[in-house]
Image (tube, one colour):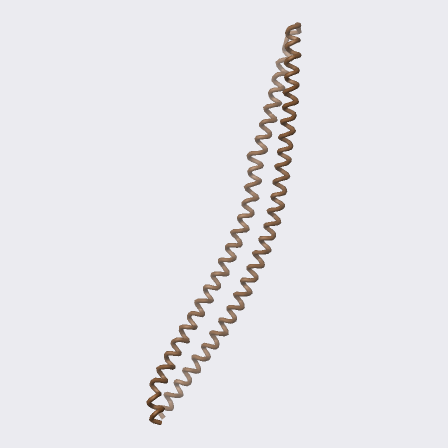
Length: 199
């Protein structure tokens, strides 16, 4: 009995130390749960930013086609038509004399050549516009497919992260419950030791 009473203070001190360690462990588990939740939210935010980047690329390509390619093609075609119309209008006002007729024939020949050149430029511009539209459509289709794939991947990542977070949270709760039970057992044992000492 004397030996037990002599060891009792050390036993109580050890039990108190174990209780403090268990309390610290429970607090660390709570902090770990908070960090895990923030990590899941950060992953979801990164997935949202990636989706916004894909949409921004599609909008930029469409703006480039509308603001640069189409106006440039229309300008070239308009200049060619304007030059041909001006030359034909000037030729129609010439007096019918032999030198002027010769000049008119030469001018008309040049105008016809310019017209063919203008038509060729117009065809090239039209082809460029069609190519631009085809490229834009292909890019939009590819971007839509990539966006759908990104959304599917992001959804899968979020589901996996949430599932892992749920599993980790369950394990943390189980560990915390077990630690609390151990802490309560230590407290009960400590009370029993104190009661036996008093008795």
